[in-house]
Length: 159
Image (tube, rainbow, N blue to C red; front, side, top):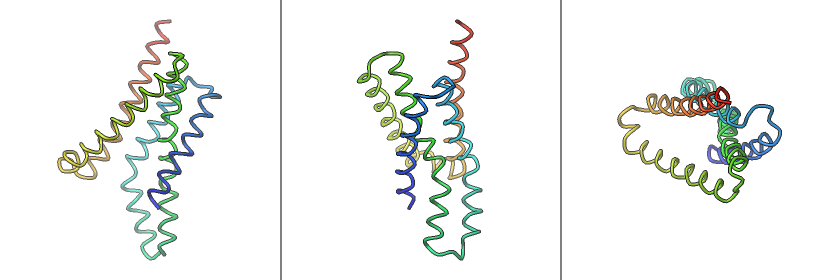
């Protein structure tokens, strides 16, 4: 169920991110930052939320537990799926080169995902534990959002 909702959320988010990138009233970097902040905020509250739902569903059937997990993960995975299409639209708009923009962003996304998995497995969970690892990930989301927003604001003040 978790893999299913993760893939569904990424797909729905990709579709939504593509639509948002065409019709957004905010600058695309701000849309990206909002998605990153939402992902990080969910991460900060996720362990407590998961524990609460586990307690609430302790006597539930497998289907009910699966549906609860599905509901919990759909929003953050949708936000995750939206980030890449928003970045692609922004990059293509700036460079006017679809191949280079998509290729560079997919490279960075894939490399970052792989590096994060290795780091989590080898260092982070052992050194920080589950709670610390989640806080680190949420902090990384917040840092990404802050860097993008700072760059956006710096660009506006310069013009």
